[in-house]
Image (cartoon, rainbow, N blue to C red; front, top):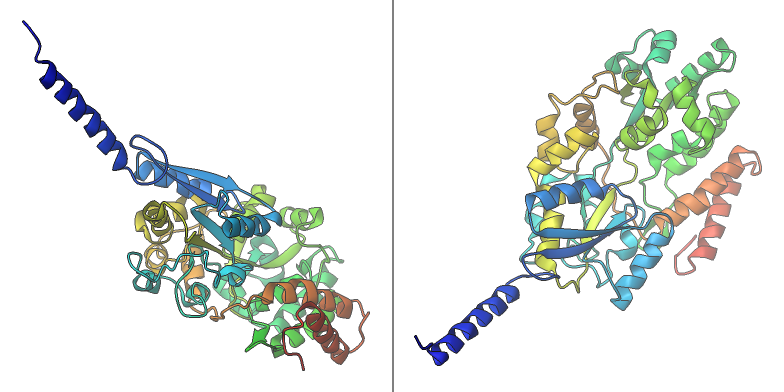
Length: 424
């Protein structure tokens, strides 16, 4: 039988056209049914979320780039400015968020179709404080809440305080005066083998969130001046073990039980204590200290020139507001989320074996609601870490004799570093 050549050719044309149209319906990079986005971060913790995201959305691939260390922000700024291999989504550390929040390379998430303003009421106020730019538009979302508390060794608390119950311990350490009294006594009774605090930064960390600049003018909060006196008193009364943060001695002190109290954020459970003292599970508790505070935090933003905005937003929304995923994250990694709805649901039942089966989400939920809300400035990280802490160290070591001398040094160094700021 003779084929109808015209009909055969027509059918082939239709087939080719259908294949072409099928390929064109895919948004994002790649071919076939796959969709891709690129995510950058300065840690590898996003691997967990990416794995869960790809499982929930088959056919989606997330290309993850981890750039650890101080080069991350430099590389990120360069990529965003030149549009050369810029990521669709990227993480920002709390200390860097104000450097980039107002640049045009961050997508406005308050606008449609994102409407982030309707979503952020699920988050804690102190997290929301740094999500908006100077015009009030949401430019980044903080998926991590980082309220702090006092991690303490239960065995040492029983020995020197007569109890390891979190509520009772909290009553005994609700002021720095009480902590210093305990530290002086413990150092004496232990023959100098046990101290209340690891170092002076255990005191200063509780005040790090207070901004240094207001209306383009240096403002030295009274709390920072108070810390100067407190750290000097703590050393004189042998409250401090003098271990540098991150040192081998600091890590060993957790394992050996040489320090009673470690002020730390929620993330410290996973990344400090479990990492440095894995064999001490059950020997720890969490207590409320002299003040509610937050330390650190991670935000997630979208590149304004991304060609994959739908998928990028799907990932950002997943990381911040997908209750099922956040519940899994909390259970699997002891990760305290920024989502109050999820945290409050978990608080009554979720416990940590490492913390002696304490309801740690209940603890952090309570603290998170009391953390003061401050909007950071682009100057805070450098002033706090490079200028103030250097002065604090000099004052502690009596290289500076008076508080007035310390104040003048802070002003001098800020003026040299940031001549555009007004300094009295």
